[in-house]
Length: 93
Length: 197
Image (cartoon, rainbow over all chains, first blue to last red):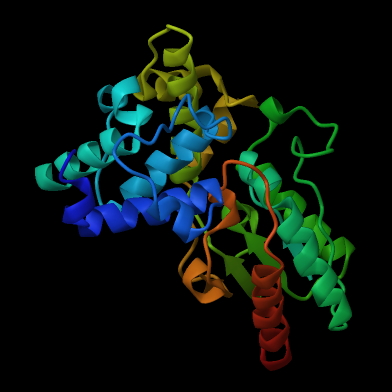
């Protein structure tokens, strides 16, 4: 997670683009998200329906399958958690 | 032009875009009509008594009633479109994907409330007796038909994907929003198309 800023991986770029679309934020603001930026439970607009849309979009754009058991509070709580999860899933594929 | 709206929550997210596109079509001299699918939006029919077959029949009846020559569908609206009618499918989506987001929303909300539900179990319930997802009571028939429904590649309609429109799809937004430039592009694609089809 501490590697976040320098790594700038492809997954990171795609994940930020998805969050931009879901949250309707400008690119600059999403660009400033770091590993500790709070998501589910921190952003009032990110309710369960929005999170569900976010996960479904991640499946499409990252070509991964997200199982029920994968979804927990930790993975959704921060940007770092979500990115780590996405990276692990892409590797797993 | 018959306009078939997106389904369920996506209809709310795309409400403004849908109306804005219709206003632009009107300005271009194209009349359009936006019926509610039975059980959706302001329809007084119970949603849990609906089926995709019935929605398709109603879409055909609406096309005849308004003497529509073309159809524009948004997202899941494609699933109710008469395949032989010429027109456009904006960002078409399969029923399975529509359900997947809704099933997932329910499992996430359940988990937040300290209950454990699985997508698999909810799917079985949906097929057997219907299930309420994200506030939408879906009957067993509609649920099962949506699971199998996909845009038909051999329909007379042309796909307009989000890449063509530019920007992020408004159905993804956590809150309903508007994007006048997306409405401009979508209406222009349709208006240009209608003069050549």
